[in-house]
Amino acid sequence: MAGKSNTSATFFAQKKLLGKAHTSNLKTDGEELIGSNIQTATSIVFGETIPNDPSRTLYLLQSASNGGPSTVEYIQFTLDVLTGTTYDANDTGGGAGTDTGEDSQVSGPHAYKFRFPSDYESSTSNTRAGNGFFNNNALVHESLGAVQLVPPFFSQASPNPYIVKLYQDDGGGGVGSEIPLLDNIDWNVDLYNGILFLQDYDASKIPAFARAFAYVGKMAEEVISSGSSGGSGGGSGDNNANYVVTSATGSLPNAKVIEAGSGISITTGANTVTIASTLASINGREKTTYFVTSSHSALSPLIITGQDFSTVQYDSNKIDVNLNGQLLHTGSLSEVTAGTRDYNLSATDSITFGFQLEPDDIVDTVISFVGTGGSGGSGDSTASYLVLSNTGSLSNERAFVAGTGLTATDAGANGNYTLANSNGNYVFNEYLGQADGSNTLFTLNHSPTDAKNVSIFVNGQLQMPATSITSAPFQDYSVTGSNIYFTTSSIPPEGSLLMSNYTTNEAI
Image 1: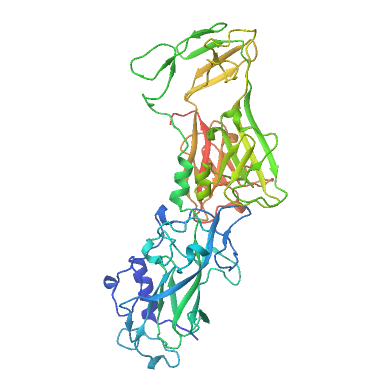
Image 2: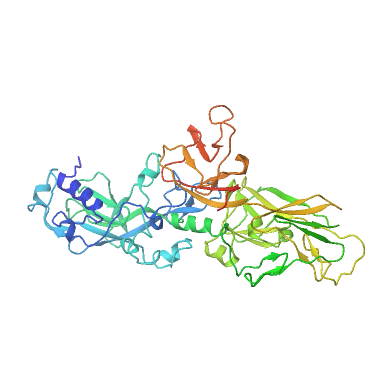
């Protein structure tokens, strides 16, 4: 029966805690040159969900859910001897095991480094291939955490797919016999840096290849960055921004003064601007649901009949696209092709996804818009009109919209369109922290205007709100004041990233 010596086990754990790889029982931690880590920094923490039971199919990108982002890839690495790790484990301090025959082992290498295969870039569909880390012949440990192997604790499947498999050379440069996990050479793999350590050297069992799952998804830093890049907050404001004001001010160089045109009257007060107009507008949001009935290939536009993204000028701040409840991120076609964004709005009624859609996938699009309005009478189409939304029929029209710190109330046709100064702000992607697997309480930085205006995301997945966490129907979470409570059955897994969107009357 395989059994690691106390020396080997102690050195492996001690050096790991000190930020070093364990490559030799004859080396102190100060003599180890390759670093290791217990994952903490967001740049090296997995930011997307990992599948529980992926298939061990070489170079197949796999995701945790149907239509979700690919996060793992099964790769066959080559193993190179790590120089400076050759010794006889029977020597004093060598930490040899006590299995039969190990007291007569000879000097040999005890550590190996994981290297990408020479044809990796041509074998994989990983969009990160060739980025400097996922390269042909690249060493895993030299990526400093940008490339990591997936630990077995991410799965409860049996057998566990994330257990590394070792193989000998078949004598001709190919994969030969497997060296089992419990073999008497007693081996360990540091999954952070791709370093294999052998406690006992056996010349008849030289490891040449290793098969393991590498994480290919976004790190937490990328998830947080992409989620927080689109929001705007309150505060003192930007003097160089384009402001609409009721009278000129020297402190705002790009300010535009509102003037009343034909058929429009403006009444100003200390805190309100009232515009009397014959214009009509429709304010609200429009949701369209599309059920995928057959496979739809990546980078091929998906036409959604009846949809028209041009109504909001393709403004990503007014358009949300969800796949099976997962909020996606928009970008240019080149970004989608490169795999750094999820989709592109390719036409008025179509979306180009960077991944394949499958039957039973559900695509939801939500547009927040100010609809078209009209003006009474024939009028002069060349005059300068201030309208509530661009119509296309007035060549010199200007659209009037409520900016940050203002709320608009429309009384309808022949009524007033009133702007009120308020402190209401939209908090976009507030980072609540990482779940520890037991914490059911998270607190928002500001008080939301209403519980129904709060959206909670766990690793980008939209959660279902509940009216109570103690009585049916049980959903994922409820909101009380500024506190977020998760139901017992929906506590986010340890390490999950929590984010929230909500509106608040507090200044931010």
